[in-house]
Image 1 (cartoon, each protein chain N blue to C red):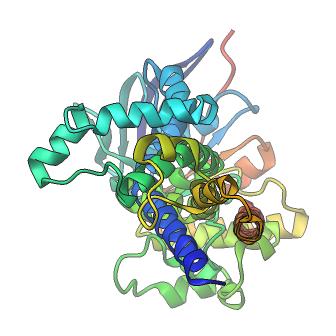
Image 2 (cartoon, rainbow over the protein chains, first blue to last red; image 1 turned 180 degrees about the vertical axis):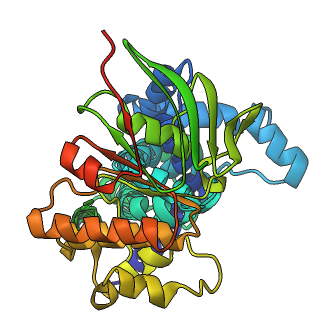
Length: 228
Length: 203
């Protein structure tokens, strides 16, 4: 692998990892609300969460741009409080990737929370466990495989993010030019077929690896979930 | 007096009502399936909230008089019909789940229930009778002040059922734990009960 390709892969991994780490708590909170909450507007929240899945990614990127622009609602807060901007930065790429990965992660985590047998939680309560301890010792360990599988899936999705990223933070070498953007760029250059081929192979390998890992985790969980 | 229960609960079309106060020993709730016996256990354990009434066990008010203790503070040892062992913990960890520090009775109870050979096993590898014994042990070891048992003999064959019945008698007799015991089997009720509360379908 040449230095340039290696840099692209490292940047992509960094962006993907940051995206997942930031999104995971949000995804978990949303999944919890959707799995356990009873409130008005649940259908609407469900719809909003899934929006990035069906919306043209360019629209998602444009909305992020509006929000994070210096005069935008989020951008102004970030600038006032911390004096930072995520525009044209790898952090912005991570945010775009995280938003696009959110629906997949929420789905996986929600399913795993719903598959936790509530009767086991009741049993824990009668044995003297507070709601917090019940969550820590019963709910979380039993849903952990789903959370992990969802995170790996989200990571794979984040690695592949293109439309929202290029709209939101542009295509800057070494900063926001992740794997898909590098492939797109190489395609614009005559005679760069070799580079495209190499980058595409890496993308396939990473994506397939992540999908298989996610599936293996989920299957393993299936075995552990037998309840007498 | 051990169980002093007076509860009303409307669940959809069905109205569950029970009033009894029984002396120490084994109180058997007896009646056909579907009349709400398990719901009554759920209310005593704090998993279901009665619409009105009171629940007192051994003189302690669990519900009523402006009080509604959460399940974890009721000190009920609930042996569920389906055992409900935690699938991600070995038998040993299941038994210790509700234990407060240094339960002196660990050895006594583990031997009484004959679960010592099972300690390192996973719940999914246990037979129905073994799982039931572990569930009973887990309930007692949680420092329970009384036991709630929901059809503990269901899904067990004759010999296993006999074995568990003997255990229940010993726990109620020797250890003096008040037991609220649900069954639809008349013979079982007659054999175990200190007092029988018959729950029937209102017309």
